[in-house]
Amino acid sequence: MEPERGYAGTIDLVARIGGQVCLVDYKTRGTDREGQVKSPDPKVIMQLAAAAKAEEHSIDPVAGTWEPWPFDTDVMLLAVALGEVGARTFTARPSSMPAYWSKFWALHRTWQAQYQLLQQPSGLIEIGPPPQPGAARPVD
Image (cartoon, rainbow, N blue to C red):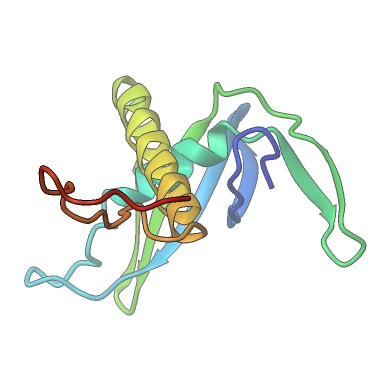
């Protein structure tokens, strides 16, 4: 859970590949018309961008223990599409990461606002028509 950011998620794998820390998300995909495993949905980049901004990670989910995220945001983000005919690996274009993080954060804040609104009574309060000129006013 990200206490300051208010979101949580699961990364399939954190690995060091060629000296580079990689966050990996596996996606099961079907086969396209060319007989290859289909590409992952682009929204996986938002999920990976959110993971790269993690503040902490779970050490023991049963006990509920957490520790600070030991990696900085300079990580390689990999989506691995797995299918019946093989696997394909994709990386997020580094220049697109700020925009994907911004989109994730905007959607997250929209979800938070919607959740808060649903906890409240309706935002609309019905009011009656104004009193007619010369009509008696109610007494408190």
